[in-house]
Amino acid sequence: MTAAIAFQHITQKYLSLSGETTAVEQFDCKIEEGEFIGIVGPSGCGKSTLLSLLAGLFRPTVGDVRLFGESVTQPSPAIGYMLQQDYLLPWRTILDNVCIGLEIRGLKNKETIDYARELLIEMGLSGTENKYPHQLSGGMRQRAALVRTLAVKPKVLLLDEPFSALDYQIKLQLEELIAKTLQKYRMTSVLVTHDLGEAIAMCDRVLVMASRPGRLKNVVDVPQEIRRLAPMEAREHPDFHPLFRQLWEDLQNEQ
Image 1 (spheres, rainbow, N blue to C red):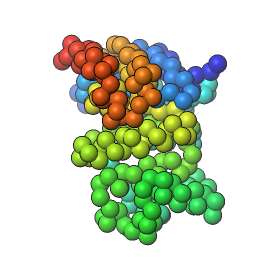
Image 2: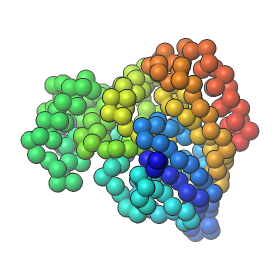
Image 3: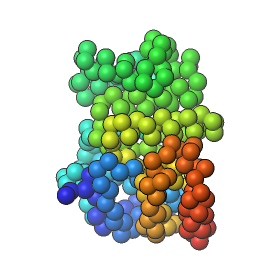
């Protein structure tokens, strides 16, 4: 069976005035359809580079990235990408903001707008359709950004530290919301995070990256007993802290 995502012998180099830098070196990984994968590692180890390669923003220096068996050579409509910042346009209403992906892809019509409205209700944003971004809290804005991402019905969701700018309580609420959403729509997902607890509480497997040049150092499987729990409940499971310590020790060795 073809994997949903395959990184095959990936090396990524960048050129700058100071010379050549290797961000990722000989990275191999397969992600099955419906899996939720976390990526953790030291700053500068190539975590976000891997997401950019998967999103088709540029090609790897060496190797191949495959999405459902096809080489990724350009941005794909199958990919939804959620970043640290919400990037809502201040002059557009929330409904117009969440429909912007539909506009760009030529998919905006009554049916897709109604679907976007349904997602707003599902994400607890009923009544915000005609408001502007400055009228919403940070957590509400990030939920609107999630609706914008989901409105185009992606098959794969990329999450690049989407909770890092939020208060801890709101962050936990959004973790649970996203976990439920991914379970409902059975999406393949990749989360880049510095929060080890978040990776364990939300993901099926956690990839640990070595420091630059980024290489795959370890893969930690999260037990089914934790995976079936909500993120807050997962943190209270007796197996949570041993996993956290394992990830912590892996990363401490990279400092």
